[in-house]
Amino acid sequence: MQALDWIWINGEQVKWSEAKTHVLTHALHYGTAVFEGIRCYRTQKGAAVFRLKEHVRRLFESASIIRMCIPYSRSEAEEIILETIRVNRVDECYIRPIVFRGYGKMGVDPSECAVDFVVGVWCWGAYMGEKSLKEGIKAKISSYVRNYINASSPRAKTSANYLNSSLAKMEALELGYDEAILLDVNGFVSEGSGENIFYIKDNVIYTPHSHSILLGITRDTVIILARDAGYRVEETLCTRDDLYVADEAFFTGTAAEITPIVNIDGRQIGNGVPGSVTKTLQEAFFQVVKGNNQRHREWLIPVEKEVTHE
Ligand SMILES: Cc1ncc(COP(=O)(O)O)c(C=O)c1O
Image 1: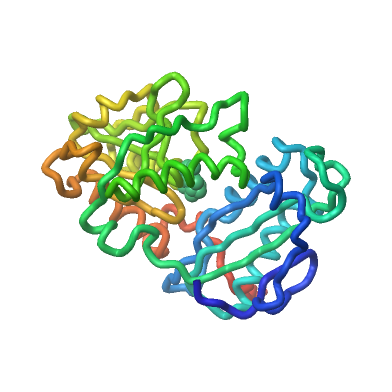
Image 2: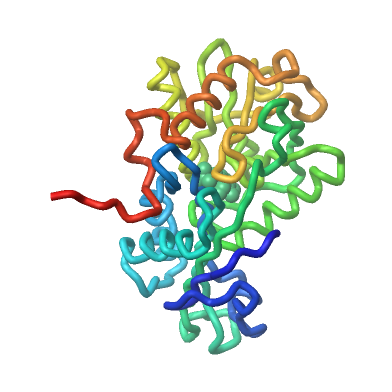
């Protein structure tokens, strides 16, 4: 990771190299943190954050699920994020707000620990490499089961939930695949280690309707864009076999954007190359995030303050 200049910590911009926390921070020991992954894109009208309000809303909802009170309003949090991009003078970056139980008292109960609010940004290209977006990737159904709804609230983007993702990702990489697909406790497809999943069969687009997924903002974006383009989109129970015989499949996520899947568990998906529906949606997605689609311009929040002429 290449260092930038500033990281927001609890009310001030701190130099990147000095952005530190105590080793007895509660979240480091017990995973009591919620975070977001957001992207800022370079557009013709300058740097803009994609679906900032929706990401900040999910951050607050995640915090609420784990009974943590964020010491800012949503609009203040949005402004802190924009300011952190501005002070780092980048026009394309990945943004990581994280809110965590800090230093105070050890033990599982976090209620007497401070709540710390940090925003870091860095430059991050294609999550699985540029080639993955064009040529697609190989995925493996994981031997790990996705977090269970009544065990760790998959809807909340908590740090603790990502141990499950890390185990699945490491297993997939070690076995020569690029990414993992996790099934839920009932054996239905849930999502990737850091992405939602879609597949296409006979020109209909399907995505798992599962309580074990993170409700992705890219997932929502793709559903809207696909319907805009006239496709039928269904949220449904999905089995591994549905994936094996799909015409096309792809992952969605802020980091992964739209990454085609061309092979699952050694089975070629469709023709073994990114399919036409996937490519159409990828194209539509990049048009939107780069500000070339007027219809969804409201999804892009400018980083620089807009000058209003009265
Ligand atoms: C487990 C998991 N599912 C889905 C997603 C996709 O969510 P989004 O599109 O909001 O980034 C992510 C990425 O944050 C993730 O980590």
